[in-house]
Image (cartoon, rainbow, N blue to C red; front, side, top):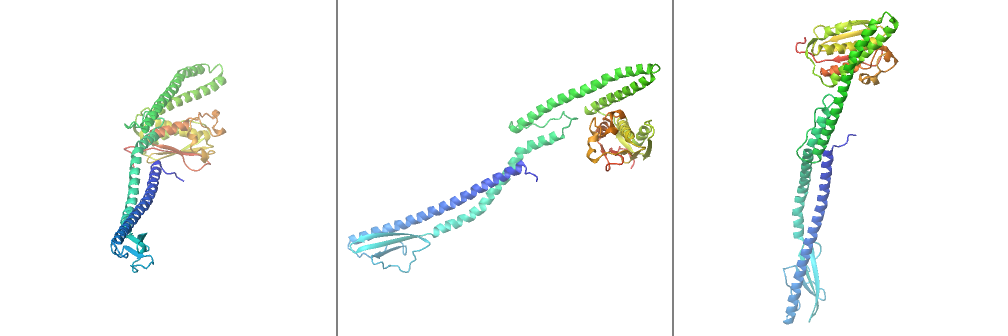
Amino acid sequence: MRRWSVRVRATVVATVTVASALAVAVAVLMGTLKSSLESSAGQEAARRAETAVQALITTNENGATTLVTTGPAGDVAIDPDVRVSTHPEQSWGEGYATVERTVTTSGGKVTVRARSSLEPVRDALHALRPLLLVGTPVLVLLVAVLTWLLVGRALAPVSAIRTTFARITASDLHERVPVSASGDEVTRLAQTMNATLDRLERAVSKHRQFVADAAHELRSPLATLRTRLELGRREAPRLVREALTDVERIQGLAADLLLLARLDAGEPLRMEEVDLGQVATEEALRPRRDGVTIRLDVATDVVVRGSRSHLARLVANLVDNAVRHAETTVTVRVAPPGTVEVCDDGPGIPVEHHESVFDRFTRLDEARARDAGGSGLGLAIARDIARAHDGTLVVAGAAGPGARLRADLPPGDTAAG
């Protein structure tokens, strides 16, 4: 299951938190308001009862009758001790706040009852409820939108850093992630990543330079050694032949390492319009292992834009690899707009190794042993050359019998349709 992003999680948490807090606040507000209004109604009823009591006492002191009514009509009742209500038609039940007071007069005990309507309480709550029902969701939605926007704005530099960092490869370590001017944790993260990239670029540059220097320095002594061996061929022909084979292998390895170092360093290529069919034909017809027939299926006018020497090396490496593992036949095909396929009838490449065969110094089995002439760099160099031309190199088709490698290169401006 895909996890939610930080932006979604922050928005959900903030929205749920605010919604919960508002729900509690609304419940407390409604309860407090209701209690306060009912308390006010009760106080009003008590005030009316007290007024009636005072009027009753004053009336009795003046010698008047003990059965009087005071206050708003129907809201105060004064009953004699016999409990015969002077307002039997009035309701003193639900919907009112009521207060009873008992007063002793010269005529006996008198009960004073007063009430205050709770209708204003209900009206106030009814008026407030729609506002809360509409306002609370709107406020929650506003919080969600603002959180989404603010978190997105805060994470925008992180997204820019991630995009740039994902684009950086070993061939373009000079790139740096953007550093915002906010001076916050994201800025410090970008600065730390750029410092790490600086150290990595220096280390990779030193490594590449070392490989290039080592390969270059090996060329001269190897050439000298080969010359001396050639001169001594008559004295010990078999020994010299074996030594020359080893020297040729070391020379090839040195040349491969030097080419890899140049490709890794992103050395600019001399680009031109190249007839891919002609290049493939020339490389396929070079002498190789006896007993293997090379068949050509080359379309005409397949023109690509690239470095002729590098494209020739790509085709040569593919053909060399196929010849090394073929039983009897290797087929080289060139098709528009810029496809080169090299097939052999050897054991093939297992599906699980379709990518690993392009790793440097990779050999899959004993058929690809060191004494078979392979250094394990041919396919790696071929793929790097294809990528340097904005193309691809893959193992096409299922595993065995036979391997089929396909390079797809962008067509040149003058390529035929």
